[in-house]
Each structure stands twice: as C-alpha cells, then as structure tokens.
Image (cartoon, rainbow, N blue to C red; front, side, top):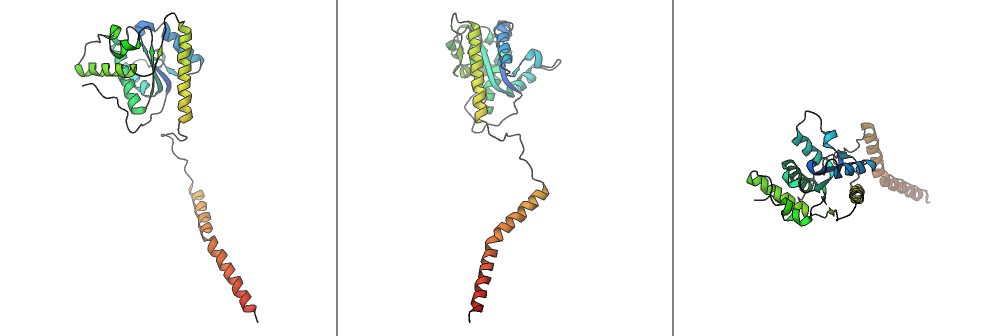
Length: 233
C-alpha cells in the first residue's frame, strides 16, 4: 500500500542550514543545466547544498544527503529523462515529500525535457522504475505522483535555458521572501531572554507598591476628612 502524504496537524521545525536543496540526475545534467542553476543561485547569494562541495570525504552519502534535505528551506526537484532510473534520486524524492508533510518544507518541481503527465502518471521515461521491494517501489510511485501534482515550472520547447533558470531563481527568491515575512518573531530553538534575580526582585517590589497605591490614597483622604471634622466647633 502506498504511503499517505496527508498534511500533519503539527509542523515541527528544524534549524535550516541551507536555503535550497536540488535533487537532480547527475547523468542527465550535472555539467549542464544544474551547474548553470547553481551558478545562478550563487549570484543571488542563495545558499544551496552541493554534494560535490558540502559532502565531507569519507562520509556515507545517504545520511548526509537526507540531513541536507531536512535542513533546507526549499527543495527543488529537477525531473529529467533519466531521473527515475536512479535509486538515489527516488529515495531523495521520498525524503523530500516526507519533509514537506512533516516540516511543511516548500517543494518546487522543475520539468526539464519531460512533461508533467509523464511524471504524474508514470509513463514514457517514468514508466519503468528500478526493481526493488514492493513497499519501496510503492513509496517511489507515491512520491512521484505527489510531487508532480504540485505547481511547478516547465521548460517550453525552444525556450532558452538561461531564461528558464532565471525564472526558477526568481521563483525560489519569492518563496524565501514569503517564508521570511511569515516567520514567527521567536524561533522554536531560540530561548526566551532570562531576567536576572536583581531585576526580578526589583520588578516584584514595584508591582507590590503599585498594588497598594489605591489603599494609601484612600487612607490619606480619610485622615484629612477626620481632621477637618475635629476642627469644626
């Protein structure tokens, strides 16, 4: 049975280490389209995870990639012709959709020389997935369907890729700005500013005086009236 990607009632937060994680098939476009995309992100000072730079030597690929996905504000999924031929890409996609469900992560699908229906209905280049356990393959299919149902960007025929990349970057900037404008003033991992003991004691004394002020006023007024009455012959 395919896993459900229904939104959760609570959305826990993680500390964001990266602004963008890009999931792509290296055999398709590492030295072409995605390299230009990373360069465009750099020009806009958007901090993106890069496995050839941010992945420490000697570290296991899986856990490090999953951690990078979890700590990214936005995930960009570049669906290309060979995307579904990679177990790594499909596993990344499952993780991305999990983070969307659990952490409310933003996900931007990019359809690069493939159509949305191909991914959505798993036909054409996405008709045959890699062999694997049935539950794993069901998870891949569910993630592909869920991601393809999201609003994404499409490379139209004969459109210059440079213009398409600019559109992607502008879309990412818009999403980052939307997140910043709606972010709470106090982050979950930030602790409230503590008050020292002296300040707390001073505040307590001031509050106590304020509470007794009406009583002192009434007492003084009563004494004044009593003095006036005693002076009457």
